[in-house]
Amino acid sequence: MGKWGKRIGYGIGDLGCNLVFSTMASYLMVFYTDVFGITAAAAGTMMLVTKFIDAFTDTGMGLIVDRTNTKWGQGRPYFLVGAVPFAVFTFLTFYIPDFGSSGKLIWAYVTYCLLCTAYTVVNIPLNTIVPRLTSDIYERDVLVSTRMICAMAGTAIVMSITEPMVRFFGKGDEAKGYLVTMTIYGIAAMFIFFVTFASTKEVVKPTVSQKHSSLKEDFKGLTGQAWILFLLNLFYFSLYVVRSTTVIYYFKYNLGRTEWLSLVGILGILSGLPILLLLPALEKKYSKRSLMFFSIVLYILGDLLIYAGRSQAACLLIGLVVTGLGIYGIFGITFAMQPDVIDYSEYKKNASVAGLIAAFQGFFVKGGMGLTSFIIGAFLKNGGYVANAVQSEKSLSYIEICFIWIPIALCVLIAALTYFYKLDSLRGEMTRELEMRRGTKG
Image (cartoon, rainbow, N blue to C red):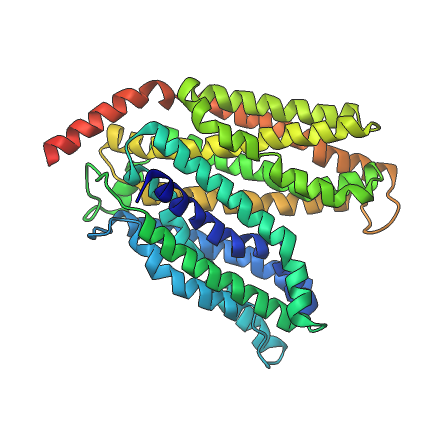
């Protein structure tokens, strides 16, 4: 298997995850309320409750990965273990049983929780495996960027073809359309995970085993740099949710450019592609810390350009592209920091806790997305927002705060955290020390 075979094989794992994850993020609520037949309040409560369940399953999966030792490696076996359940539970989540309202709600809880668990089984190892695939820093950066591009491709596919597929397969029956579409996504994801398993090989062994360690000892393996990474994930995904949620409101109501909504969605996804393609080369020349600051500045400048040039089409388009470059730069660099943070726990604490680090990342990501969605909803309600109506001045100002000023505040918080990130200067020393330990161990 050549380098690009391994890179693409690893990267498309996130495409497989996103075929279902992005669909759930965009369509699951409307499926539950408009097709499945449960109330918005019940669906919203279920989404909140499952976040707490996710916290336990993510942590548990992280601990399991850290204690796994097979001929296939630590994380890689779970691409096989989770592939079939992922497809099955995708089908069951979008299957509508002939039960009463209470029975259907129980079905929704159980199947959605099982799907989230199956997602955890494949996604946590995807987050942990990079330091085991290679010790070459540049190659790690390429792997991470390839994964980010494939994740973006998965989101683009979902946003482009899901509704047409539901209409095509349903022919007026939305329940059938969703079931067939999601079954196709689930089966496609299953085969993608098989490819990811076949295309990767864990060749870098951890310098220490966590097999017999306690949970308390595992927590001691987390460093201050790990907590910086967790908070970066919290604030980045909060930024992502604010931007993706409020951009439609801002262009529809504040700017009155409803005809731009499709273009805004496409630019939001594709504008980040150039920065993700360039990141591996940039990371060879510049520190991740410097590139993070640069990406933050890009986002803020793009945001201010949209605000200052809101009456000029060119300024709006350029601003959207610049903010896209900035937000995906932050995205790519945050994930590129993760292998260094994993190595730092081995280097500093003599602890192999890649799974626990990935689990906490997932927890902070989901927590940030859930909490931010709740806050934005409450904020818009407090501003007097009324759907599909002419908005009051107060409502318009609240939408503007959400789209322009809250993201800038989040960027400032990300910059403040990045100031304390110090692993760029330790990267060479960590690599030499860990290679020496592996040589001694061997």
